[in-house]
Structure formats: structure tokens, C-alpha cells
Image (cartoon, rainbow, N blue to C red; front, side):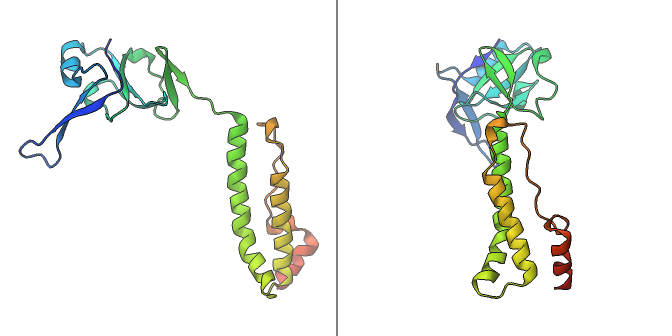
Length: 187
């Protein structure tokens, strides 16, 4: 099986009729990619390119179709060991094994909360501007309070309980309250 670690561009050759140069790669031991591929590839296995972070960033059953870049390592692997969902999921390659990446629940929750906080801030900003210049309507004041209450609730969430988090409901006309809704409609 071919292993081609920590590759770098060894030369660029401009050939007639091509708009871009042909790139030649060598590994950390000075082996030429094309020579190694042509001498050792039997046409039966697949190839993965793994970044320095250990994650698979490209794969192919034919090494001629790999996207190579400096710093990656290329490994020949059994085609039957390539996961069927490799195009949709994130995988790493460690100690000869392809491992599905499972994000940490608390990190996913933190990302979700940050997105929701950003949305809340976007909603709050023009409402707060209206208050700051003494031009807020009653409806805007009610919306501002609802959005700020929501943002406070988001900041108070305990993300260590992920994925079992009771997310607060985002403010809408329906959630501001029936009495408050009539004020909004009258405006």
C-alpha cells in the first residue's frame, strides 16, 4: 500500500498548450508522487488525502483524481473500507483507521447559542436605537423587552447538559403575549 507523507511541491513545469503549470510533488523522504503511484498502484484500492490536522480532505478510487496540496499525506486504503457517507460526513485517519468525527455536544450547543445570540443582537439593535433617540413606539418597546429577555435566557443556559437543553423560544408576535399583540397591531 502506498503511503506518501507530508507532501510538498518539488517543481512546476509549464507545458505548451496548458494555461497552468504541471505540479510535481514529493514526500518527506524525497519520493516523487508520480513515480511512486505509477510503480506501486495496482488499480484495486482507493486513496485518501489527510491534512496535518488528521482529517480526510479528499479521496478517490483513482489517485489521478486526488486534489493534492502541500502538507497533506496520501494513503492507499482498501476501497471497501471507505465509508459510504464520506462525502457527507467528516472523518479522520489515525493509526490506519478511518474514524467518523463526532462533534462534542457542548461545542455544538455553544455554536447554536452563539448563532441565536447574534440573531437576537441583530433584532435588538434597531429597537434600541429607536429608544436611544426617544422615537420608540409602544410596539417597539415591547419587542425590545422580549428580545432582551430572550438574550438573557440564552446567556443563562447551562451548556454542559447538552444535548438535553431546554432552549428558550425566540420572540415572535405570537410569543410576545396576547395583550401585547393588540398593542403591536394598533401601531
